[in-house]
Amino acid sequence: MTVKTGLMRLNPVFTQLGDYPIARIQMRARDRRDAGLPVVDFSIGDPREPTPPFITEALRSSVPEVSQYPTAAGLLELREAIAAYVGRRFGVTVNPATQVIPTSGAKEAIFNTPFAFIDREAGDAVVYPTPGYPVYERGSLFAGAAVYPIELSGDFVLRAEQIPAEAWDRSRLVWTCSPHNPAGSVATLEDIAGLYVRAVDADALLLSDECYSDIYEDEVYPDGPMSALQVAGEGSPGVLTYLSLSKRSGMTGYRSGAIVGDPEAIAALKALRSTTGTASPEFVQGAAIAAWSDDAHAAERRAIFSEKRRILKRAFDDLGYETVGSHAGLYLWIRVEDDMAFTDRLLEEGIVVSPGRFFGPGGEGFIRLALVPTVEECAVAADTLRTLLA
Image (cartoon, rainbow, N blue to C red; front, side, top):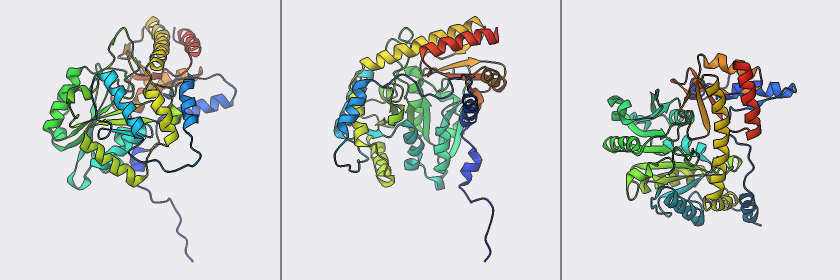
């Protein structure tokens, strides 16, 4: 019998995209830890502060005696809690029955969305900003879409006029992100409205990644960053907003988020998610109900992130490095000469950051620091930075 040897045949998108780039930095950091050397890791957005106890208690009390499948639509009580949050936070009324769907975190929701809307035979395209969250591109390519990355610079805010006519003509989905990952820049209501009006004209859905909307400097944004839901009007036609409890509530491991917006698009996503069996466990939904229903803990966490930002930004300011954006979201975006060389230099001293190019074209010459170590660890890292880079 002849046995074929060689590599397994895979979806060519795997080859096109390669490894998730941040994993390379993580492997080097792990080697350093394994050698017993100190590491302060700013590379992955996974904060260290404990999940508020009332959320963990809500999770425990929601575990049933008999485990049954959750529905893709999610618990009505959770959808009502999310709708109430949207009303408090953005002053927008949404219908929890038709405009809200809970998700297993934001990442899977962002990745899976193109599968509901892209017609690969028609040449549908997805537009997204770069540098940005790599999942916009990855989900689009796996769904068979053409992609139009729009390279950002300056203040790192995506605006309608930056998207060429060719991209608008083919666009089916247009991603925007505010507060922006990785730069922490914040779009104005006018910026978002410009994208929305142009997307409606192009018969495209505007997809707004607002997972960091509750992390910002209060003195800079006293009312918080704006939402695409605020420009769409009643019923949110043509808009889907993506929300997450990961950073707002310290629930990264719970994988709990939401999509809110256009009822027709929400119905399509429910149908897709029913097909794939993608649904948040109901005991996680119980914890999410508690989290979305309380704003005080989010404000307390926001104050902690602001303190970390202040400590690190002051160090870079003292050393003469420019911080771009970074008044909101979970990250500092620092301009450097060579982002790879700078990352390597810091890693040798146990400070792990992400080179900007890992987030796509336009990220070269920047590094990203996620505000995830403790306040005390940030202070130690700031002292190390001053010694190393003086």
